[in-house]
Structures are given as C-alpha cells and as structure tokens.
Length: 125
Image 1: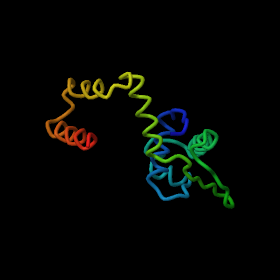
Image 2: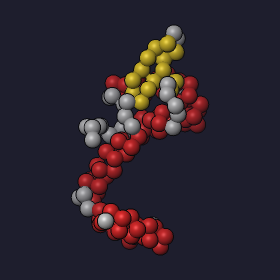
Image 3: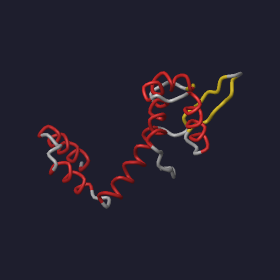
C-alpha cells in the first residue's frame, strides 16, 4: 500500500465524485455533482482540486481553457489506508475490538452477524 496522507473531508468528497465518474473529470462536473449542493464557488473547487494535485491524488492537464483531472489513487487503496488508520487509532488493530464496539452499540443485526460468521469461515479455509 502506498503512503498516503489523510484527506480533509471536503477533499475526500471531491475524490468520491472523481472515483464515481469516468476520467477525465472537470471542475464543472464536480460543481454539478457536489459544489452547488454544498454552496461552493468554482474558484474554491479549482483550488481544492489543485491542492489534491499537489498531494498526488490527482493529475491535471490543460486543454485550451479547460483543465481536466485524472485520479492517481484508486478508491480501494485509499479506503484501505483510511480503514487501517481507523483500526490502529481507535481499536489498536484489533478486529475483535471493532466488532465488539459495533455489537455493543447494537449496530449489528442478526443478519450482519450471520454474514460475518460466513466471512470468517470462508477466510479460515
């Protein structure tokens, strides 16, 4: 796994738009799918996207007046990184601690537990 830095929530929201669309991505696409809903101005979105270029999450090309963006980080890789940090920070890398927290909070249904048991059995063989 690559060495990533945690993205602030606003940048992560933009990356979700990037990952859900076929590249290249434009700032107009981000504005249509996220920016207007959040009340962002186009210059703010451009600034955020250029910051993600600097961080190595996006690559950009200028085509005439329009700037296009391409993801350099796969969604699965970033989620693996974030989940690993979460597990380390909050559960000392203990899967049992994580599941126990969910179960004690009654967030796991019987169906969730059944699926989890099937998953564990599958991994053991």
